Image (cartoon, rainbow, N blue to C red):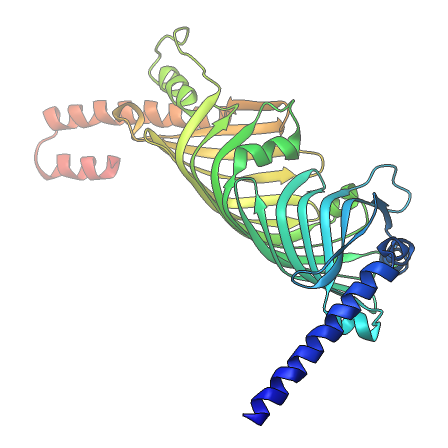
Length: 375
């Protein structure tokens, strides 16, 4: 019983001491004095310019820290910030505060983050910055109606910063993400619900360099979406009209293709994304595609092979080219591929006629031999 009483009084004394310490901290220490320390630490360790707007305030749950209303992060010699943070809480353990440790470490919560035109909400991460190496792990955030998880590491801030990351996307609204990536003047757009995995590394301090130097790999699956700017069904009907010499003036191009699923993998090399196994599945057709997309210049060059699920063209794969830019794509039937189809069509017709002649006029084994030779 005496031991329990001593333990109770010891815990009570510790709580009183902590309460006095926290009270003294809030009453005697103005958190705004930390502004120049934080700005200088970021500048010294990373080379980035940090602007803190508004007054700092103390935060005590779940750890001691400071709250910031708005922060801007700008690369050297760049006029515009590439990261904007709202309602930020930076917290470390009380043990670190009491020891006065200088390393920048702890928990980070950001209510709203705009990074390189992309929007993140309710981002939570644990970060550690020491000796020029920044680790942000794990990262969790809301991301365009879905979720983002991952880790990011950065180093070599004194020279050219190197960034490495691995991210997982779940249930992302691709249409909204596309709007922020490419603005409002595009003609080509992908929509749907996306899940994906990405490994990426890059070097640089500003947005353009980070995109141009990016390398990595990943995979994706997009469900129940659409390709705006391309009507695959129109080009299937156009190819059918060309092959069978039908009128083309009554065909309607809706500039949109709905699909059930779009899957594939990709690599990124110096800012150029390449894929060789894109598979688009729709009710009326399937399409295999390969091509490249320059992420910074936003130019693209893709070749599609379309297999109709309808009876009219079930025996042919229609070749389609998509080139140009995301803002002004050019979609055309591949002329060389269509020429091959027309030649095959004529050859099949000729073979059919020859078979009929052989069947009528060359009986027996000689006729069978000629039929097999034609086949």
